[in-house]
Amino acid sequence: MRIPDLIGSLSRPFVSIELLPPRREAELAGFGQAVQALKGMKPLFAAVTCGAGGRGAVGTLETARDLAEDHGFTVMPHLTCVHVPPAALPGQLDALRTCGIRNVLAVRGDFPAGMEPVSKGFRHASDLVARVRQLAPDMAVGVAAYPDGHPDSRSILEDIGFLRFKLDQGASFAVTQLFFDNRRYFDMVDRLAAMGCTKPIIPSILPIRSLGQIKRVMELCDAPVPGTLLADIEAAHAKDGDAGVRRYGVAQAASQLSELLEQGAPGVHLYPFNRADMCLEVVQRAGLLP
Image (tube, rainbow, N blue to C red; front, side, top):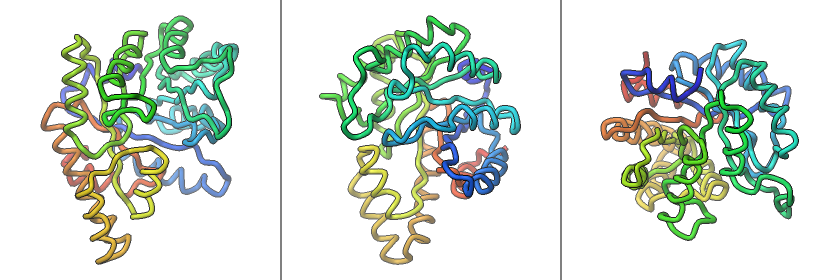
């Protein structure tokens, strides 16, 4: 089913999740266990990434198909400008349709070091959105949003303008990059509404597991971490190591989630990083377990 239709049919906030395709045979068992546990949250949909940092799209379609056929998930595989040449797009969309998939997230993706967009390729997510809408009007297309601004944008306002353009090109909704200051999310939503755009913007939350994780996230995603939050994480680590950070991460994510829903977000998108434990604790603490 199309994600916008699912959202429109709900009378209560939802939870969705983001999963990474297993990269090695040894990861399959753990991935399957995590998926089985995450089903207990009854997520509205599961996004399936193409890998951060330009690592490639290997396994994205296969993982999405397995989640849909074997586990009953509504899935949303990522399509990226980096890994989808225009000539290959019709075949990829046909493959998704064959699996019963009717949702995609159209993003530019991360170009590997030294790689530039090919002259005849999709250069921007908006180009990919427009082409998917042409080729597959039955598909619901989501795009990425950046409450803290995309690293390549010159300002928050410019970035919101780019988001509005992607939505105008035919995207039905957006899923944000992870963020930690809810004011940034609501400011973005309010500015879009002032432009006449009220399509769903789904906020994303990362439950912080370790000090090393948050440092990697800061480096990989260019996600600003408030100084007070980082100080709290470092204090929790100094006191109890990563076990202390994990406890803090559950409480912080549950608080952020609750505030987002109380102030009108349609739902929340969680990053389990293929592990179920923290996300289950977060939604339980926030009172969202079915």
